[in-house]
Amino acid sequence: MAKTNVLFAASECVPFIKTGGLADVAGSLPKYFDRRKYDVRVILPKYECLKGLDKAELQEVTRFVTGFNFREQVVILEEAVLNGIHFYFIGNDFYFSGAWPYTDMRDDIEKFAFFSKMVLSVLPQLSWKPDILHCHDWQTGLIPVYLNDSFQGDLFFHHMKTVFTIHNLKFQGTYDIKTVMEKTGLSSYYFTPDKLEAWSNGNLLKGGLVYSDRITTVSETYAKEIMTPFYGEGLDGLLRAEQNKLSGIVNGIDTDFYNPKTDPDIPVRFSVSNAIEKKAENKKLLQKKLGLSEDPDAMMIGIVSRLTDQKGFDLVECVMNEICNQKVQLVVLGTGTSRYENLFRYFASLYPDRVSAQIFYSEPLSHEIYAACDAFLMPSLFEPCGLSQLMSLRYGTLPIVRETGGLKDTVEPFNEFTKTGTGFSFANYNAHEMLSVIRYAVSVYQERRDDWNEMVIRAMEKDFSWKASARKYQAIYDELMADKKREETPADI
Image (cartoon, rainbow, N blue to C red; front, side):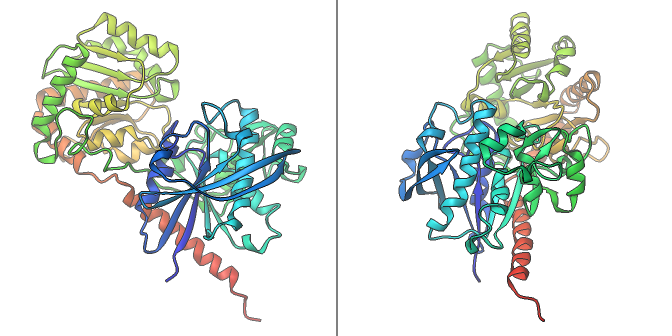
C-alpha cells in the first residue's frame, strides 16, 4: 500500500526554533504517526537564529533565483534527517536574517507570504511529493490561497489537499488591505468578505480557513468556543459557516522528554510506583533551593507561564493576599507584563518563606517545579490547548484550572464521592470562584491525603502522548485521501 505523504509547514519547530507551543507540535507530532502508512515531513524557514543544526547534517537540495515584491531573491532549499524525520529548510538572507523569527506585523506579513509561496515553489524540486499540505497558524495561511491561485495552472498541484491548524485564534496576521495586497502579490479578487477581508483588513489566517480542505484546532472544547463571539476573535461567523470541516484534536507532549523516570533536570527521579515518596524529596530540595520554609505540610503550588492577562493573572492579583494566607507556598517561573512580574516580586518580598518569584525562564527549573509541586495553577481566560497542565499531570502535580479550551478537555475535576478525577477546576472567570477551588484543594491535601495521593497516581497514569493525537490526524488524512481519489477518478459517463 502506498504511503500518504504529508508536509507540515510551520514558522517554528523544535529542536531548531521555539517561541511557543506551535514549535512543540511541529517538531514532536510527526514522530508519532504510523510510519508504515504515513510519511510526515516538516518545512520551515532557515532563520539565522536557528539552533541545533549541528545535530542534523544539512544537504542542499536546490538553489534558485526568484522574484518577489519586485526584488530578486536567492532561495536555498536544504534537507536534513533527525530522529527519522525529514526536515526541509528554506533559506533566504533578506527575509530570514536577524536574532528573532518575528519582527513587526508589516514586515512579518511579507516575510511569511514569501515563505508560503516558496513552500509551493520548491515542491517540484523534491524527489518526494506531498499528498497533503498541513499548514500551522497564520504564518502559513497563504499556502492554501496561493495553491488556489498562481499554482493551479501546474498539473503537479492538482488535487493536492490542505489542512489548516489554528493554534491560537488571537493571532491572525492582519494589516490594512492595501498593504497586504502589496506584500502578498494577491489581486483585489481575494480581498472581499468571503475571502481574506475581515473587518476592513487583510487577514492571512482567514485565507487559511477559507481555502483549506479541513480546519483543526488544538482541543475539542476550543473548537466549540471559537464559534462563539467571546472566543471567536471576530471570525466566529466564518467558523460557524465552516464547522463541517472544523474539528478539535487535543495536543500531546513528548513523553520521552517529559519523563520523571529519566528526567536529568530533576534531582530525584521517580515513577508511579514511588511517586509519593520521591515527590516529597523533590519538594524539600526545591524549598531549600528557593529559600522557602522546608515545610512538608504546606501545599506547594507551581506556576510556569507567560505572565499575561490571557493566563488569568488578574484573578490571582485580586486574591493574592487570601492565597498567601492559606497554608500554601507559591513558586512562580516566567516573564510577562511588568504589572504581574512586580506583583509576584512584591509578595515574594512580603512572604519570603511562602512565595518564590523567579522572573525569568529556565527549562531545567520548570522540570523541577513540575516534579516538586503538589498543585499547578492555570486560571486562564482562554487556553486553546495548554501544555503545562499535561506536563504537571505527567509529574503527578495536580492542576487547578479554569474550565476552558484544552484545560477542560484534559483535567478531570476531583469528585470526593466517586473518588475520581485528576485535578480541580472552576467554570466562571471569577477570582473568588478560583480562590474557593484553591481552598478546596488545600483542604483535600491537608485532610484527605489518601484521596490526594490516589489522584496523583491517576494523573501520572493518564496518557497524553502524541499517539492519540496522531491517530485522529491520521483519520482526517484518510478522509482527504479518499476525497482525492474520487477527484482523480473520472466519473462514469
